[in-house]
Image 1 (cartoon, rainbow, N blue to C red):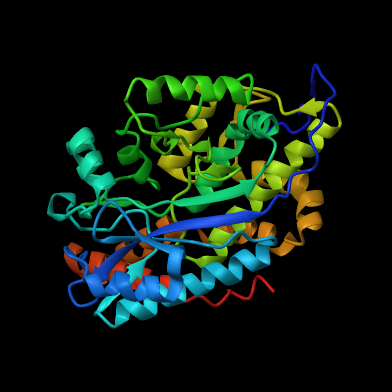
Image 2 (cartoon, helix red, strand yellow):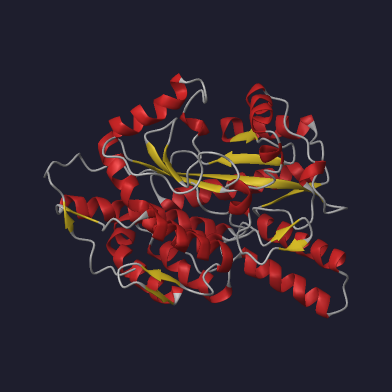
Length: 397
């Protein structure tokens, strides 16, 4: 990470008021039949009606009928976000169980076929299916999005330009998609391979101001290619609906504690960069080509094979980068009262991500005589159990 060089001087000493730094988390889940462990092809209408009756605007259908999305309220603390996300997961699990279904917080299903899925009948989704054709039909993937409120538009873009350096580090902690259509893909996050088939994805470009961002995006809007910026799907984007930066690179985490850890780290990263700005400094800008290489390493290996320390130009163990990152974020974790949540990253590194757990479950089952099909169903069983377990691990208070 080379944290010793985040010190290029800004040209102008003009600072916006300190942002609110409120936080919100969105998660997408897959709905599985608890008997077959396969995805539900046609979700019962009553399921969404029941979820909406209990959660109101905090739940919505997704592109495919086998998916459901939840979003926390605007939260002033990480603890509030954890409590709200716990409530959302518990409610979805409870309602789904009434229909002999269960949500799994994983970015891909271990063996389901995208060709068998049906998209939700909704004008936006019908238009998306017509526009994107086979590319969107195979979007059998789920993700986690984290919003942090940065009211000032130019400050938002300034932080937006600097944050991509850290996105691969967060992705590595979230991986939950090693399987695709009954195959071990050899990747920890196959979800991004699928998602990158869509236009307007990947690492975002750099903009000199919020005005330049708006002018650039409006070229596509005025040309009639997109109706608004919700159809810009970069790994990080200024939200089209809220005054927030929206981090979108991560797989959805199977374990609640992991999701909260990553959200807390993203929150602290935004404040750390704001602190630099107040000191008339900024994080060193690295070429997107080099950051994309770390993105690929996180997709392929998670944190197993290390990443490039771009300041030194060498591959180093991920744990070294994490140690530097956690030291860098310590004042911000203290400020937000989320030290334990941020430090949980060491626990993820120690016991592995959901992708690591899924692969271990599969290989153990096969070694004990299970067929590949049986082993993949055991992986689904494990995902159901861990998604439904909304108790903290004991690592967090």
